[in-house]
Length: 309
Image 1: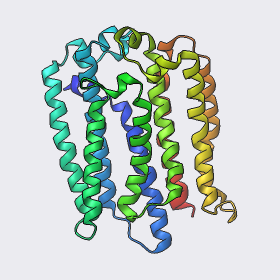
Image 2: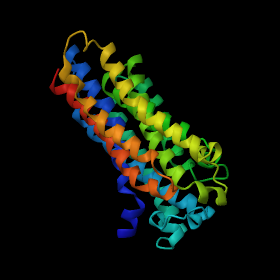
Image 3: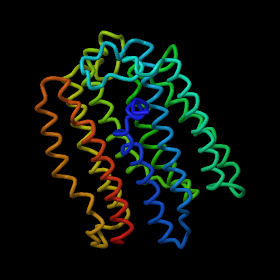
């Protein structure tokens, strides 16, 4: 059981929850202003679905990298995965991927039933397709003949699914509408998620080179990947600031809503610390920190909108 828990990589879970929290509580703030109803059941089920997707993705990555021999070439022993180390067999992990794919689909149907049935059937079927796409994306990062993670497309998929789909999709579950300004927090969460993936790929750049995993970090080189990382960590708070600005909080002088900006200093320190790293393996310690920063960004934005407004 311990090996399965380790393979689930629990430290990645706060990152996956960030988009749901951001989208759901922006929806709660907007529905409250308009006299609508915020359904806590949708929020609870959305969290469950997201957790299942994340565990599915982590198991699929462990399986895919394990059978391809990528993990066996990792320099960082702390990141030794279950299949590569022999703690869990490839067959057992493949079965776990199948089981979590089914569980994810069933939970997705339950979520969409509560959110859309019976008055929004077109939206129900559309989101069923989106749910299937999320499951396939979770598996396809390392599994299959042409996994997109091995072609340098991981950053794009993380941006779309962890950012735009997670934030804008969860917002739509509650409001049944799309608002263009949701692209701002969606992009912010997406960029922070890309920052985590890029750090991971920078850390593994040499082992990925040996295994033929052509991540974006490997394609552009360590130095350029570091510049890319700084951009990814610089822009999200600016995007959140713009979101709050276009919604009139500056004009209304409701400055308590800007509580999320207290992350400015810790993010500056985090960027500075990452920039001093010379050995890729030293980046591992910052993966969890960026994930927590992303989670706090979502929580503080939600808190500011719903308790100070």
